[in-house]
Amino acid sequence: YKLLITLYARENKNNSNLVIYQKYLEFISYTNDIVRKYPKSETFCLVKEIKGSLYSGFRLLMYAIKKFSKQEKLKYLSELDINLALLKVYIRLSFKYKYISAQNYKTWSSLITDICNMVGGWINSCQKR
Image (cartoon, rainbow, N blue to C red; front, side, top):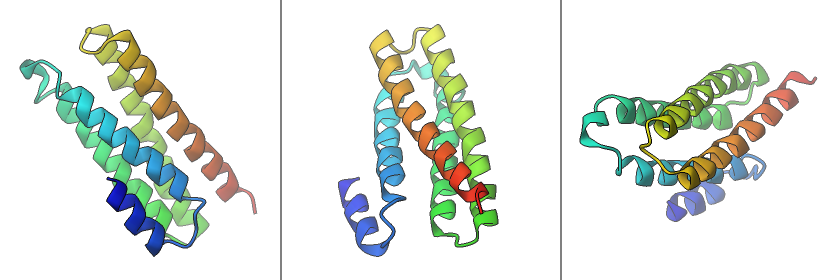
């Protein structure tokens, strides 16, 4: 995914969005590593939901980065915020059912919290005129 970051950095002159993009790619990578360890019985249930929300959120992030209108950005960022809230629930369930360790939970939670904070800040900046 480092190649993706490099290509994106060349393509996008606005580096303020690059940090959240990098963090989200790191989040995707970590998530994919973790869900590989889930039991097979969860492959079509919880893992499918996690991955669906994860990639849907990435798509929304890309739309938000590419849009110029603040209203359009707000629409995509709001949807991204909802996806992140769902992912938080899925992460909590994973820990509750002991699919992940306490250390995995802590790391995964800190990654998603960082992204949520960045999205929240971005939403606030779009709401100010």
